[in-house]
Length: 266
Image (cartoon, rainbow, N blue to C red; front, side, top):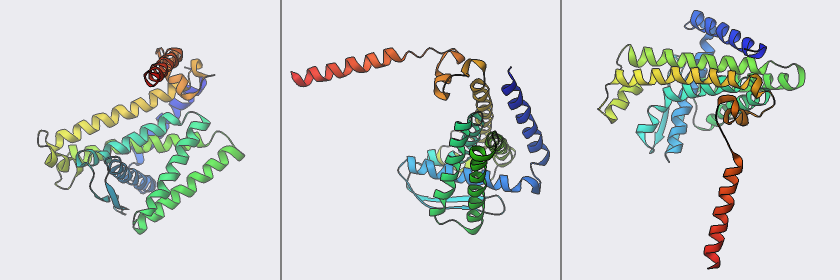
């Protein structure tokens, strides 16, 4: 383990300790609202991907939220909330290791925060979205103009908290108890082959795996083998034991194009 991997591991453990100690306190209340927003925007993204129409996205002070939509595939939209929040957390963690990747993650967050304000938000969501859009923008400016690294630490905390809070959320709302208004119960109503608590348990396991995956990919990116490689090149190269021969791909494309041209010529 090199110095970067050690620093990342210690920082992640420190963030995890803070989350576990102050998870339900007022100190981390704004971050819980951020997680609620990512939960709701994940419902919205699933709706758009399944050709639905989003009417409104709202986040409430009690850490609840609602996404109003028309159309789309409910079997994809319903689980997208809890699973989507975990995906966001995993992505933030895995992208936190580099300056450009952390900037990309932060910029993506700002984009969806501002985009969601176009869908009839309530006052709480307007406040939380503008707050995090401005805060994250400030950290991007500091990273590139004043001091580096700082954005990496911010994106890592976003990812760690959102991912871990998503696990707590799934457990408390769908595994520990059965609530008729929960996403797990709604999923059960759509497909009665799996009880609500069983649905929640599957989501919880998936969320844990996603957070571990994010940490692993981040550590791979910081390895000595990836020092002079790009983000994608590192994941698809020898650093993780995969063979990725681009020559074969380009050769296959060239052969396919020649075959198509021959068909037209005939």
